[in-house]
Length: 114
Length: 110
Image (cartoon, rainbow over all chains, first blue to last red; front, side, top):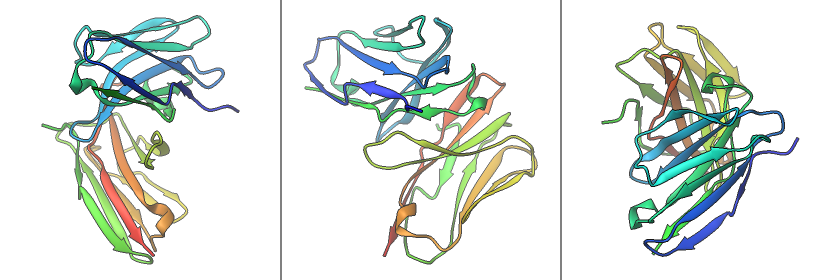
């Protein structure tokens, strides 16, 4: 069974640019959640999608957005990048909505904003 | 302020030693999970506990959920270098809010 695939693995962007990250969940998993991980703040919840609908959202500015497609694949977009957006962005999939099913994480996308 | 407090933040021990990592909150969890994360990778789920007082064992790892469902501990017996990593607890509140602790960075020296 293929795991959660995140692309790209590494990304360097300039302040003010926008970026799109991609996540393919485990086959059959319908829920995809996104997290930002930084050394100072740890893992911070961005949002959760289930059946193409955003079900939960964390406390991030509107520059952070996402969507989920009918095949459960998800994308996350960050517009007008700031230096503080540099982080490891992790995608997690689960069979159903809510974390009680247990997350399977991807290896993440390391975003560096210069 | 972290909703979930993990302690210690860092732990460096010799191979063969025992250790315990703690996860505490002032709120009641509906469920709690433990993950291990290695550098450059995403966290990997170790266990989910749901019932107060529950104890689960995974080889040399023992997980305990407090009776009041506000705290949890992870005990590793005879630690090995392969146990090195960041241990994260994650608590679910009200069945739809989920928070990670800041983690315990464990280094097991051969």
